[in-house]
Amino acid sequence: MAAGPVDSDQAIIELYLNRSEAAVSMTAARYGGFIYSVCYNILRQREDSEECQNTTYMKTWNAIPPAHPNSLKAFLARIARMTSIDRLREKTRQKRNAAFLESLDDYSEFLADDHSVPEEIEVRELARILNEFISGLRDDEQILFVKRYFFNAPVKSISQETGIPRSTLYSMLDCIKNRLKNLLIKEGYIQ
Image 1 (spheres, rainbow, N blue to C red):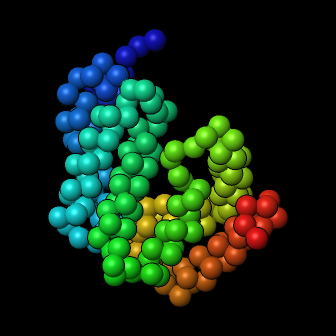
Image 2 (image 1 turned 45 degrees about the horizontal axis):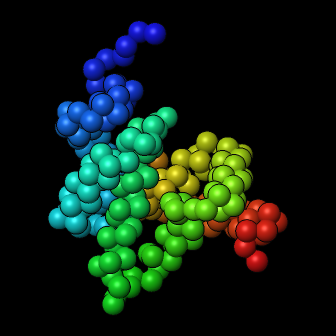
């Protein structure tokens, strides 16, 4: 098997596995802007976003090994997202931004990290259901769903990116959320 370019995801993962500090600098060079945008979309504050970006590098260093991700970008996105959500919760413990955290809380239970074996089986089944649900969405709905609920992009920026009016986006999001809620009720995950 031929080796990929030095900065390929697989090469970067190999650097982590070999405990080479170059892995962190290569991750920053390749995905620094992406990680920052994931953090900023949640925190909306430069200093906290930069701090979470750096924490993401540290958590990635500590996670690989033993983890061996198939997609480095998705792995980094998940760490950055959860780190930013934790930071937001910490900062807003006394003054919660209820609407924003509520939208994150809708999905955070599906993305929890520490599970027993039965919980892990349930999480995998839920992941399968969610993946099938997302795969069943139209392409534009998939993009909207992931941008809004995984990367927490503001509706205004999604509207500017896609050219879809905000009111239409809100309607589409509401429709998608209701379909997902009905599916999760049917599957017994919510009552």
